[in-house]
Amino acid sequence: MNSSQKSKNAEQIVYLNGAFMPISEAKIPVLDRGFIFGDSIYEVIPVFFRQPFRLEAHLKRLNDSLKGVGIDNPKTVDDWSFLIEALVARSDYEHQAVYLQVTRGVAPRDHTFPVGVPPTVFMMTNPLKSPSRADVENGVACVTAADNRWLRCNLKTTSLIGNVLLHQLAVDQNALETILFRDDYLTEASSANVIVVKNGVVLSPPLDHLILPGTSLAATLEFAGALGLPVEERPIRKSEVLLADELWLTSSGKEVLAVTKLDGKPVGNGKVGEVFNKVWNFYQSQKPKPRKLRA
Figure 1 (cartoon, rainbow, N blue to C red):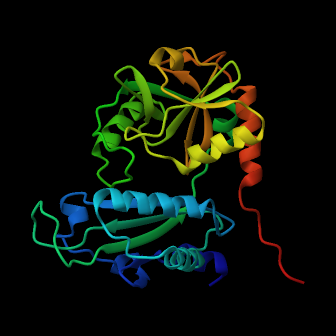
Figure 2 (figure 1 turned 120 degrees about the vertical axis):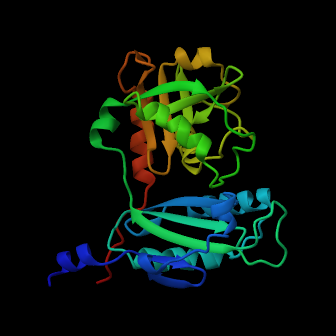
């Protein structure tokens, strides 16, 4: 059997509660609170050339979300880093998306937090799906909707039915994302953050309980600032979004991606903007590069 056949036939390896195992062997009891209540936190970490991108920021957000729901972080930063490296090494892909989830654990079904129950820790990694060249060069279509989710969107919980339903609104209209508004103000998209560009200024909603503090959002704003672009974090009205010169999505999978059509109408001139191209190119330059082999 050649290496490509071996790679194709190899079963995915995951991590569950202290052990690496084939995914077919990974079992979680039905009374796990992550299954019963969605009582759990997750994180997705992009990996380029087997090197996590902005790992420290992802692990900080994981810790903040765990604190926000009252689950003790079961691992130290060093523990997480070691496990992620070990899991990445067990996959054949150079570019990966590492998914990790921590639940409150297994206990009889009761709304009250159980006492003395160890959390469930699950990790897997899949090939990283980056935006296509066509989407980067031409932009993507989005639709808009009212943000009807709960009021703790800053926590990265697995209770995502609101996001799923809002995302499906976009899918049903042949769009990539649903951009959300609460009381006439921009929050985020169903699975991404949103950035507005007007008159050369890069605008982002304030980081509060209504949006997820995206690591890719933070990176994009940082990179825009490094390029000398004016950056503002402030409330953004829907009317400003509809009149934007440029509109961007940011997430671990999308990186930074231009929106050129919103509710069937062009954003700006309907083409990918110059500001986006500058920031996108800088973003690519900051991603991990192939490690050089030692002589």
